[in-house]
Structures are given as C-alpha cells and as structure tokens.
Image (cartoon, rainbow, N blue to C red; front, side, top):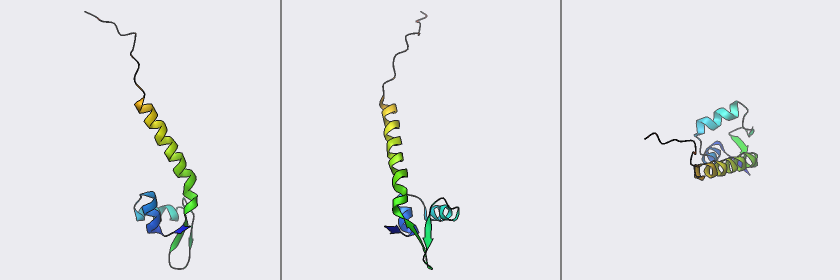
Length: 76
C-alpha cells in the first residue's frame, strides 16, 4: 500500500533522486513518518493506465500502413 522512495523509484523506473525532487515539488503526494517518506502506491494507477493507452495508440499508428500517394507523376 505504501512505498518507500526506493520502492517508488523501482516501481516507476525513475532514479531515486528524481522521485525525491518530485516529492519536494509536491508533484507526488507523500507522508513523512519521522524517518522516511512513504508514498501511496494507488495514486499512480490512473497515470499508468493512461500511459498504457497512449503506448497502444502509438503502436497502432506506427503499424498502420502508409497509403500510396496517387498524385505522384512519373516524369520519364
């Protein structure tokens, strides 16, 4: 349910220093228990779902064949 900064960095595939800076910038919500920051894991679910949908959309676009251009004229 709650992750440490190291676990959060592993979960998000980011460096620990970057996760710490996001916490300090208040872009990631975290609580401080006196020793370390703890991050609620569920706050990333909607972001990760959106990223999955975006990746699928990009793959779909990249796999779509390019139609032939009918306006090309042969100048022989």
